[in-house]
Length: 217
Image 1 (cartoon, rainbow, N blue to C red):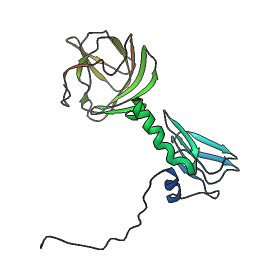
Image 2 (image 1 turned 90 degrees about the vertical axis):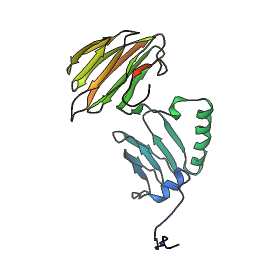
Image 3 (image 1 turned 45 degrees about the horizontal axis):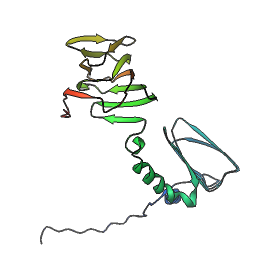
């Protein structure tokens, strides 16, 4: 064929199969520790890989050859040479259909994202961010109420045929079976609210959508 071109490619390649492989590929401090995102404070500790939330301090004392992975909802600690067994934990969680396999505490949606601040059997508290010029679907819930408090931006709120503007520091309440929608009309600024869900059943399955600009009806 006249449409085939080949060029030499000089790159370094290493198959990263587990956390131990990752450790060998990353720059290390004087004690051969690796810290990603978080702040590491170590004493008499060597050859460790620490991955943590960027706002969290991880302190190690007399700990060697370990893997420490600290996320918002899961803490994983293992000897570095045994880190490949994390696959067994993932398999177990998949078999149990654990929600953390699919979603962490921060869940992304077409309109923005939300972070779960607290969750119990009959109560969920979220911090919701709606991107500029976006909106959640027109929806209702059979089993829960929702209380929205605007903490940043200005919300356009539709509840059962009535539209209101809810400003920073103001709130609105949605009863079960009420159709509602949250819209951010700002061209530039995100809308942030605190949502408190209360009910006998508090589940993402309890959503009936009527209109959705992202085609999820």
